[in-house]
Length: 210
Image (cartoon, rainbow, N blue to C red; front, side):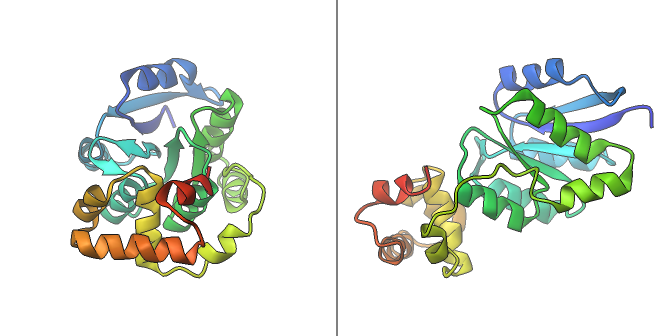
């Protein structure tokens, strides 16, 4: 293989430029970086430039909130091998990203070696070795276990979707737009989340996952 093709979807130009400068190759094979600043642009570029070896997908894009972007990308391109990019180390989001099909989770505040390891695992030509690494949890940062996740595990899919958006900083109106639920229904879901997680307020709920 002459090059590995990597699609970087991030709305910050400095992040994109920094990634390209820091990682020009993997194990001696040059990287061909494709760039997108929105989810919609990323979807179109992926379709137009297949096959693409890996996708680095930011979770905070202008046209996608939180894990909604990951859901949409993998729904449109089920074959995509996606590593999530995030500025936050949030255990709930990491778990959900993995369940949704992400193959890695890269914290922007993490060490450069972690990104290198992720790229090598996703792109290295030794398929059995790569598969072994990806089958483990090593490409997802480890964090201490918390009793709150026992309660989270009992939530249904729609509650989890609403919780993801709340943790991404979305207002009720933004959640309503993203999920196409009425504002009243969203408020009911948020209220039931407060009860399920035994917290007093939205900010209290968010603090459990930070």
